[in-house]
Amino acid sequence: MAFSEALAYILVATALIAAGPTTAQLSPTFYDARCPNLSSIVEDVVRQALLTDARAGAKLIRFHFHDCFVNGCDGSVLLTDSVEDNIDSEQNAAGNQGIQGENIVNDIKTAVENACPNLVSCADILAIASNSAVVLAGGRGWEVQLGRRDSREANRSGAVSNLPSPFEPLANLTVKFANVGLNSTDLVALSGAHTFGRSRCIFFSRRLTNFSGSGLPDPTLEPAYRETLIEACPAGGDNNRINLDPTTPDEFDKNYFTNLQANRGLLTSDQVLFSTDGADTIEIVNRFAASQEAFFDGFGASMIKMGNIRPLTGTDGEIRLTCTRVNPLPAVADM
Image 1 (cartoon, rainbow, N blue to C red):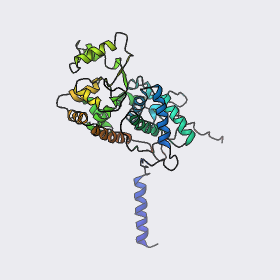
Image 2: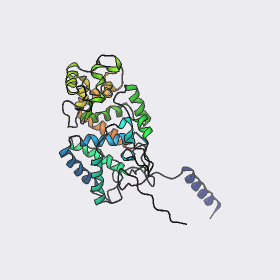
Image 3: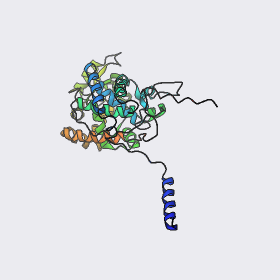
């Protein structure tokens, strides 16, 4: 080998070492060759779940959202408490109070494992199921990026600090979204998932009579809507569930944004998108309220962007056999 060739070889090798291991990229075709019917398998299970649970779609999107905001989209939110595996579940965090739908995820995982064993991560199942939930509710799907792997760890403290709260002002929400690389358009678009699903009264009852400890109702809450909510949330009714969208509660459409324009956002974190003076989110709400196509475009783009938050790929993490538990470690042979 000539000196110049040897030098070039050394330089290339050194550059590769310095760059470290490469990270696989997410791709919509990741499973096409090995599990070509994956999307249909997931959608069929989601469709069956919706026959008995109108909230199934909203539950699945909430899981995906709460997963990605804590350590990235790695399926960690699905892990349940385990002393053996040193798991303090993220579901114990205040921001995950009342999170539901793990039974649906488990049913999807079972169906997927039967067709394509030990191949599809729970993190990817959440991403695909979210898309199916939107499509089945009348929305428009997006090109779901795939290839995530599952974490062997949960991060309860991260769930406490990172997840947006239904009580927060816009400034706090903006910071939490920015911390994971999402901007104001993403904040408004992803909040649009509240066009279906329900919320418990405990998450908005302060707005009705004692907003921010003032002894008065939230001034941004439309009075007639407030009276309706007071009737729906009597004393002792903290766990009553109320439609996030009072107009078309089980459809995926732009009505969430027209509700905000009418001061009928259910949660503080909803209404602040439109009622915070001078906020850049007001124009975005108006744009989505004026055009369902614009909302669908924005929602799909933001879901793809959110789904790319720090995924585990390549040989990182694992493909969990059960979404609620990490895989058993291989036995170590006696020396």
